Image 1: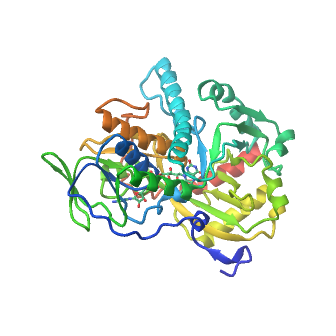
Image 2: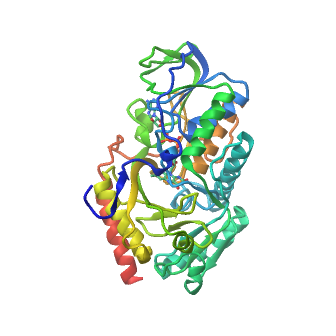
Image 3: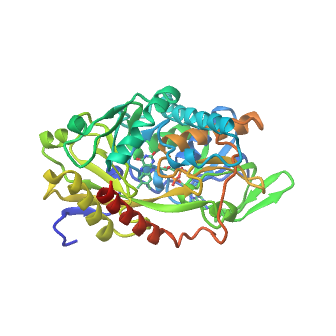
Length: 442
Ligand SMILES: Cc1cc2nc3c(=O)[nH]c(=O)nc-3n(C[C@H](O)[C@H](O)[C@H](O)COP(=O)(O)OP(=O)(O)OC[C@H]3O[C@@H](n4cnc5c(N)ncnc54)[C@H](O)[C@@H]3O)c2cc1C
């Protein structure tokens, strides 16, 4: 790469993979039959597998690539609970009365708060060393109107999610970020960050320790109903199961067309800077929190666990593009917030798929054909999908009990949508124009 923003040692792969990367493993023998077959070996599938295996079930996880390949080890590592359901809450009314709707919202926010507690507890219980730090988040308001909108949510977040939220006016913003880019913002204490590849690897190890069979490089093929469950074809032969869990999130494909129609694979992109002067790095985010903002084309960023680099993510594009497109765009966004980083070079750039849903809510349930699923992270699934994976495991162990407010909610799609989101580039352009206008018209 010739562009001066790229470090000579630039790599087109996640920075996180410097600590632990997806690697080919010795082939495990696939059992002929298993109690629960899980398709997809990220946070959802692994949390589900651990719960099931601890409960005594025989569980097998099929992962099409090497373990650690998916979004779970590529993400920004922000762990939110209770404050990250965003648009999903306002759109979730459906036909329910106002009182029912309020109750539904309260239950979902409580579940979301519980998801952070779940991550904390599984990391502690399984002894996962993944730089988990509960330092909070600062959400920068892009306009005064956005600031007022955030302010209106503080009481609710604190009452229902015990979020420790508080508004930080513009004149005190430098307590949170060495920048005047925002109109103040909201600080939330109940938000953590972690090293996503180390977290996922810790779950892989824990799942194996609890007795789950983990088969990498084993894409699930056709799923057929048989008299006593399911048969799944794989390149390594068929496997039968009582129950099947689909945990493929942003990589949900033609294997499950009814689910593919319900999730929108939306790309997210991240860059990492070269090592910064330690004093400069510490000054950028004085409380070492996770940062994000209220822009439509939002950015999320943080320091690396050694506090030497900025890890800067955002929707540089809504689709998969190479680093020659995403990295300069993200670098530009980083300099808008921190002009003092001019001249800083990028060592890593990468991308991955999130899964958006038409109601902006995560979903857990059972398809008409009888396949179980948990998916729909809407860009924020480290805590939520860890939790929903585990809750689905509990549900399978315990029969048909409803284990979360997200269970069995209608999972909408749109006419003529079959999983190929042709509409993302125009939406991306429209969002960029709306952001531009927001700053000009307030
Ligand atoms: C760049 C980026 C940044 C993000 N940042 C954050 C963040 O800071 N905080 C946050 O909360 N969330 C973030 N997210 C979202 C978060 O990473 C996801 O919500 C979460 O990792 C989803 O986990 P998962 O297990 O459901 O999916 P994945 O980890 O994507 O795993 C799905 C797996 O299914 C496999 N698969 C697909 N089809 C088959 C098949 N037929 N057979 C077998 N296997 C199959 C795929 O190979 C893949 O490994 C980010 C995502 C991205 C991409």
